[in-house]
Amino acid sequence: MPKNKTQQLTQGAMMTVFFTALLAITSYIPILTLVTIWFISFPIAWYSAMYDRKASMIVAVVSIGVSILVTGIKALPLAIIFCLVGFLIGDALRMKRSKVYLFMTTGISVLLSTAFMYIILVKFLNLDVLKIIMNVIQESYIRSNELQKAMPGVTAMTDEQLVQMFDVFNMLMPTMITMTVFIISFIIITVNLPLLKRFEITVPKFAPFKDLQLPRSVLWYYMLVLIVTVFIKPESGSFADTVFLNLSFLLSTLLLLQGMSFIHYYVHEQEWPKWIAIISTILALPLYSFVTLLGIVDLGFNIRALVTGTPRK
Image 1 (cartoon, helix red, strand yellow):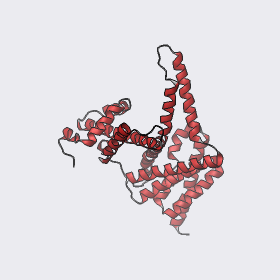
Image 2 (cartoon, helix red, strand yellow):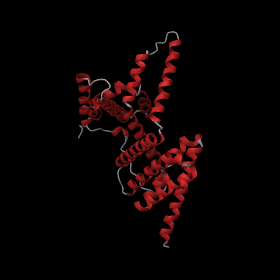
Image 3 (spheres, one colour):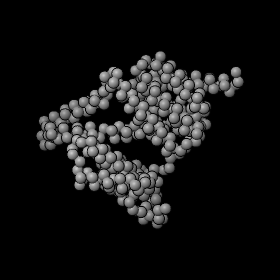
Image 4 (cartoon, helix red, strand yellow):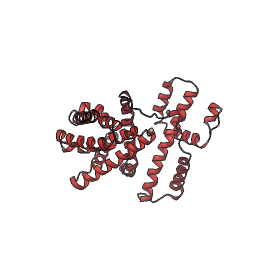
């Protein structure tokens, strides 16, 4: 057997063991889960970046099989999701794809695989995880509201307000799940790429956050959604209401990021200390409306030219 083939098989076996070990630690040692869960996909990503798709797919499938033998069937969803993520990250790196491509591919794959697992759990195991989570959140809010009613000088929410809040929360669930999945994907990429780079894998880079510039079409979409929700006002609880509510939430979040980007840009151009940008980022959430408005102005008008004196290209 040729030396390189032997090396390929040896490294494939090593990555399978490594993947299974990380998955087992994540499944059985809760105190380490918050650390190990972000690195489960690393072995598959490294192998996929080193070798062709056929070999990488074989290692991924074998890793899923071995991990099930070691950790049991309960770890199957995690094994599939992280093997898929690792394979796609490594394949994108081997093909010299951009970091944006890598991020979108990873996010979409996690979203689709999570949706597939959710359908399997509901259809075959009669286990609705989202419903369970929603029930826990609702019970928590109700208990908290009851405590507030017992406190003097504290204005608690009425039962009708609680129902309305839960209805909105349910309607926003698709967007919140999507955003959560992409945030998780971003964290996985962020923590694994530097590690892969240390193992001599060429990795791409994101442009600095201060240079983030969303397409201006985002602003027009936001204005269109705003006009529909304010003037047309779809019937509460209808499909159209749900769609426009989710679009409004998603577009507002993007404009919030645009506003935060401008703040980072301004701090950088003024050569202020970096801690000012960090504090501004922390304050962006309680000042959500102002920072979103700043993002709208930054996207719609050339206010960065006022900072640098350079017109936007």
